[in-house]
Image 1 (cartoon, rainbow, N blue to C red):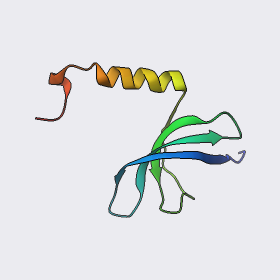
Image 2: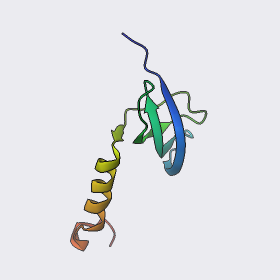
Image 3: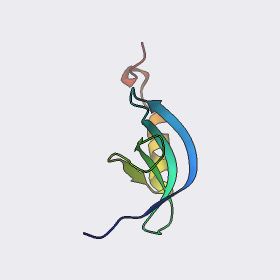
Length: 79
């Protein structure tokens, strides 16, 4: 199996942190030297290990934000 390479080109922010110190983050990540994509996944404190996650193109990220912003209030988890 071929090695997967990655480079976090920009750290956009931490979404949450678990008890073991891993953080769920939104970053721009270049996988296998390709164009960076928006990436959501859990990372170890030193960013050498990661969980499964999701990578989104610029267009997909815009659509995700649009869907979130236009959701019905009754769909919200907040009370």
